[in-house]
Length: 169
Image 1 (cartoon, rainbow, N blue to C red):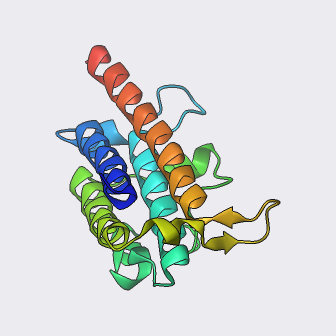
Image 2 (tube, rainbow, N blue to C red; image 1 turned 135 degrees about the vertical axis):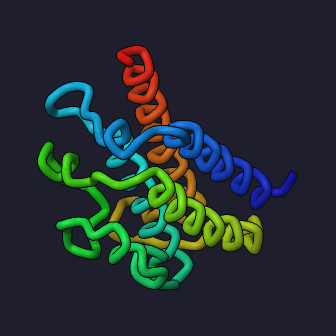
């Protein structure tokens, strides 16, 4: 396997987890906060997809799918169009109240763009510096793994919340 194939597989696993966490749930179920300050499935999936979209478009030098694909308008959220969820509080989480097909549609579009970008990478590309604001500077490989880590954590949280919701009904 090449490094690109490993990365495509890892991002594919995130994609699968997102669909399993969201599939078949109502808008009300997706918006449930199991504790007053907890994140909902809708917010978690929106956030992890925004992070992937934001970070991958940055390293690729392309427009975010969120804006270029018209998703920001379809979601109609009361946030700045550049928001990714960092720093959001309970009220912001509650504002992400959208149907599952919208969440997975946006995620599918971001995943397709991510997979296309990853398939074109070589091992040498992974050493490219993409962020000099850190010491040491962040390489493309490190950024891609960072997004995988963040996304897997949030997808796992969404799966956990789904399990709680299903046990309560």
